Image 1: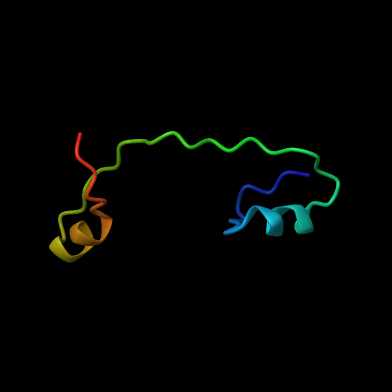
Image 2: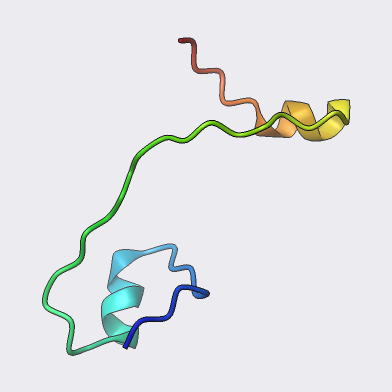
Length: 51
């Protein structure tokens, strides 16, 4: 069973929802995101990370 629409804040919640799963791969790759034109939204997305 695979459900891509559900987001889990904690890994233990995932294992409670899918008790038959033995292991999980997590993709932590950073991807570029287009910055919003709206200044308020733009500040909200700022991570502070320098390249």
